[in-house]
Length: 297
Image: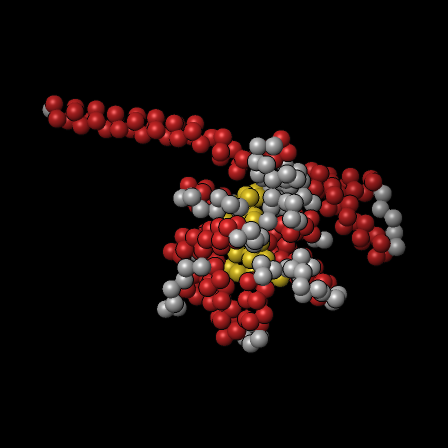
């Protein structure tokens, strides 16, 4: 009987001590972690200082083009970003819209005269990769993957084999990659299964290597909030700004309705009144729809 009591006391002591340690950990890391969770979707920092008032409060970003501009702007702190949100919340769609905006800008730049001696004027080529596909490719490969460049090359080889990319694309894309002119987009890190740690480790290595040689890489990732928190606890993805997708608020609803009605009225040669917009807002409110970010541009 005394042994049972001792065991119970020991279990209680252990439970209380773990709770105490967790509280101490939260207290110690609180100030460092707050900026990560304050950096919600729509944030744009001018000075890149995580302690600044603007960083804490954030600023709304209204389009894929504006988001892309934040990523390529040399003065911006968002060259590295990770989209987070619950499952089926629009992360993939959001990333695809940003990739489309980047592709349109890239196409426009290639139609102009490009100074190949100035990387600042070279087009930033978006490369969209699904983490689940990367994981499958790695599972079927005997090659040892340690760097992001190796993953990109493996992805391109698979794309060429499946006739997704033309034969000559690999050399051109890798050349742009080596010049830091590729927007590396990896969707669904949480879907990389047993290769998630490897993929995130290669991203960390690429970012650190670029920083050590005063280069600038462009990285856009997406994952669930839970997976992001876990990765951060494992000291990964710490160099990326968390960009948390938010449900469509009243401001964005009104803006989307106004924009779409205006576009429709222009096509039909009609004028849309403010009352019509208000009526549509009432319909939205009544239907209780919750649409997540990024409208059609």
